[in-house]
Amino acid sequence: MYARCAARSLTSPARLFSTSVARHTKVAVLGAGGGIGQPLSFLYDIRGAPGVAADVSHVDTPSEVRGYPADKLDDALDGVEVVVIPAGVPRKMTRDDLFNTNASIVRDLATSIGRVSPKAHILVISNPVNSTVPIVASTLAKAGVYDPKRVFGVTTLDVVRAARFTASIAGVHPDATPITVVGGHSGATIVPLLSQSAHGKGIKGEVYDKLVYRIQYGGDEVVKAKDGAGSATLSMAYAGAKFANALLRALNGEKGVITPTFVESPLFKDKGIDFFSSKVELGVNGVEKIFPLGELSAEEEKLLEACFPELKKNIEKGRAFVDNA
Image (cartoon, rainbow, N blue to C red; front, side):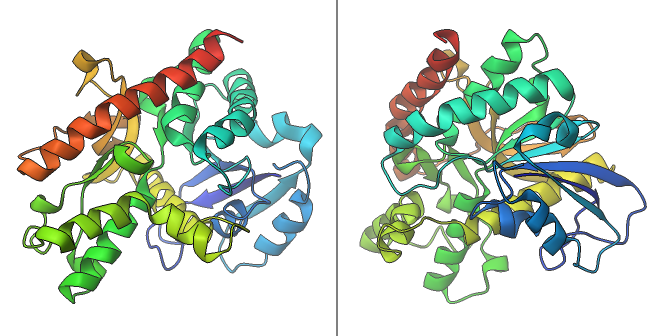
C-alpha cells in the first residue's frame, strides 16, 4: 500500500505526530499495509491502502491521511519530503532469500522516487538493509539524482535492542543506557559500543558475549518465538517511527539531532566500505555530520574487524544487482 500523510514533525515516541510544530511535512510510506508498515504508519502497498488510511485517519492528530492503490504510486509520491520504505516480504527466511525477493521491490520503488520526488529523504527499512541501501543509492545514481545526504538505512532497532537488553542486565531504565551501535544491520556486521556506555562498560566475560550476540541476532530470537510465522515487525515499526521522528525534527530546524544510521560514509572507504552506520547529525538537508567512532575496547576492535568483510560483501551485492540489471 502506498500511504501518504501530511504530518507534523514528530517529537515523542509516545505520540508520534506532534501538534507543537506548525510546519507540515508530507511523508509517504511505501508498504504501509504490512506488518511493519501498519503500526509504523498508524499511516502504497499492492493492496489494502484505502483501509489502512481510513483506520489511521481516526487518530486524533491534526494530519491528513490518504491511501493509494498499487497503480497510483506516482500520486502517492508527488510532493513528498520523506519516503519510508518497509515494503517487501518479512524475514521468515535467510537474508539471501530476502535479498532475492526484496531487491527488485526496493529498486523499482527507488526508480519511481527518483522520477517523481528526486529530492525526497528516503528511509530504507526493507531488509537486508546492508544491500537495499546501496540498491537505492545506485538506482538513484543511474537516474542522475542521487544525493548521499538524503538516503538512510534505518538501523534504529539495533540501538533500541541494545538499550533494552543492557538496561535489563544493569537493572536500570532503558533511557539510562543509550548504546551507540555501528557497522551494518545484520548479524556480525552489528557492532554495539558498550564500552562507551556508563552501564555497558562494566559488563564483561560471558555476560558480555551473550549480550553482544543477543543484540546482533535479536531478529532470530523473534522469528523463532513466532515459530517462523513472522519477524520483528512491531519493534521495527517502533524503531522506524523513532528514526523518522528524529529526521522530521531535524528537517524542521531542530539542532543537535544525533542518531546512528546507515549512510554513505567516509569512515572506512579506505577499506572499500562505502556505507556504514555510525552516529550522524541530522539537519535540514539530511546528513549534516558523520562522527568518528571514538575510542573502542579491544573486544569492539575485534567485532569491527569481523564486521568489515561481511558488510563489504553485502554492499557489493546490492550494487551489483543494479549494475547488472
